Image (cartoon, rainbow, N blue to C red; front, side):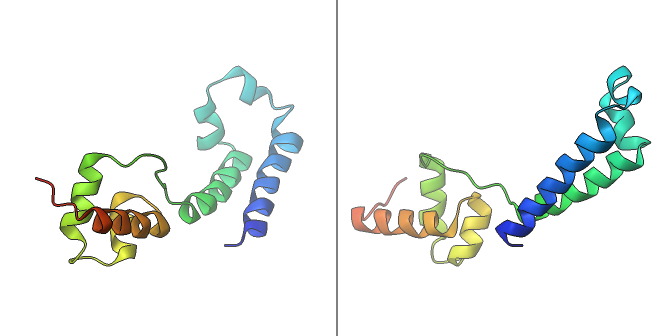
Length: 110
């Protein structure tokens, strides 16, 4: 899914919120679960958000933990970069970069 397609989905959700939900008495008088369970607009927004969730896997950012580095080093010959990235919830670029760093250091941790 392209960035533009994702943007269009987000805009659809915002439009529904602005046009359909802004004046809704149920939305303001009861719990949010009412919107998801019984409201057709809520269900429609949920379906749209599911499209975004499927396309956006969680990607960790920031400093690598010792456990992640150890796992990466121990499994580098077993899995390819894309599998390691998925298992560690990191981008493929990040995994590749970290492997190069570890190889330069010649890391063999216990």
